[in-house]
Image (cartoon, rainbow, N blue to C red):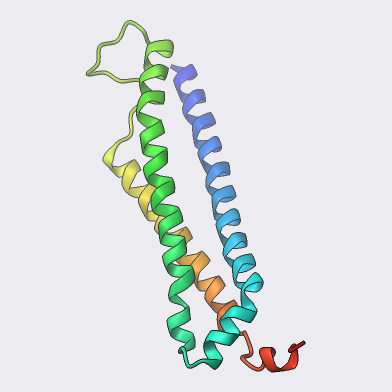
Length: 141
């Protein structure tokens, strides 16, 4: 069935482009958020917060974004897969689904999400560690 192979290749391409877009958006958002809040982060450092403790901010934010995104995508996937089954393969029973998410695929999606969250957190963390606490003193109005 050449048609099924073509559809699988198209879905793989769509998923890959979506994953790259997600990764770029999350990393960019994290770095931009740190740059936007650098005065606040510098103030917290001057007040005695350890810089390493501030690294938890992007880590928690990344974990929440990825977790909620995965949950939402799975909630949307279930009815979309059922609709695709009815449209693309109407004569097949429920046990032979045309669109299915195998455990290995789900594991790969979760692992990729964790990888993106960790990468975004590390890159934002580098930005936090580069903030000079004296920034507040130099830029005081």
